[in-house]
Length: 213
Length: 213
DNA sequence: ACCTGAACACCGTTCAAGT
DNA sequence: ACCTGAACACCGTTCAAGT
Image 1 (cartoon, rainbow over the protein chains, first blue to last red):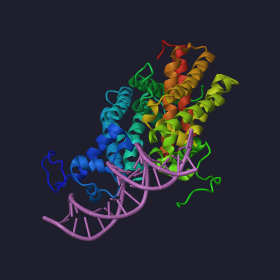
Image 2: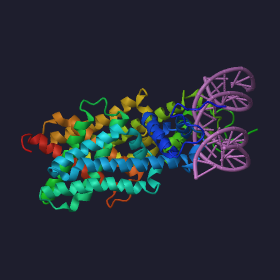
Image 3: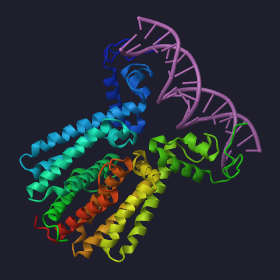
């Protein structure tokens, strides 16, 4: 008889209904450690103590598991952003600063999820992950509109601003995760804060006084 | 005897000294089509018409080939940016706009190279690719300093500004490549131009009048 | 309903052998 | 010097068979 990972709770034979979540948890750790490419369905199964064929009872595909990981990642991401926004308390600008910090913190704390969310082209095409991604973007959009309003500016440009803030945040997070910022003097948090501040502040000035350069 | 891809120039047996380049070219196409994960050493060898073992005469590893691809990508990238900058003619601001457009155009035209450069964590650790990446960043840094100077601002903050511009450009490029921007109304070029403009302009204002908010 | 065991095609990598 | 052929471990995936 083959050796089994029975030390993981003494399971034998069946996995008692939590195999799906256990596999996703294992995948999250593997992707966090070794990147999206380093994730292996067989290894995830081995970590959990089942055969390589067992995952196919819960996922149609290796990619299906990755998509599920991305879906959960976007959901957790949106929750974190909403918690950081905290209904815009005490004011929109302060809350917006927390939003940027929370974005970077999520990428740092959950590199497995973040890589699954953005490192994989296939993940987008899966049903559900698009909606979860939209929820995160909607949070940023809402925050941008609130900041514009706080300065008495029309919020017509809120969507453009949201896309800019999102792209910038994503760029900082990606460069930080990939190590490209390691050699730079300033740390990612400072770069994040300074850049978001530049983007938002200039957008506010343009919205308040559209005529001037 | 096995079937051979002799239609690729009628080669037989040996590859006459250009196998290394041919493999890199094949890898570039595969990564462009299917992403960094979709690249297979065996398939690249098959495309070129050699055995799966042949690449190991030119690369120590599958990762070594990816690193070489990233290295060449960064070199081509730096050249494209330098050409777009064109010595800052006719003025720094105009040339800077070209830089942003060139950044996005490179990611669009060479998704294989761009993915190899930034989609792979391992690529950074390889000797040479770091230097090539630094050359691209140095170009952006130089352009930022020139813009600051054009406005009569001290260029002490040029490095911070360069990192912000780089992160933003990278974010827009990544979101555009991964399809996350497809559902948005504005196109990536407009987002790129507007965001870079916001970042640079606000940085200039801060540098010119450091005291005011 | 949920998992195992065996099977197949494929990939990365090594190495002795060919030209 | 440069490549082939055979070999090994490993992975994704399928399917009949077990409980």
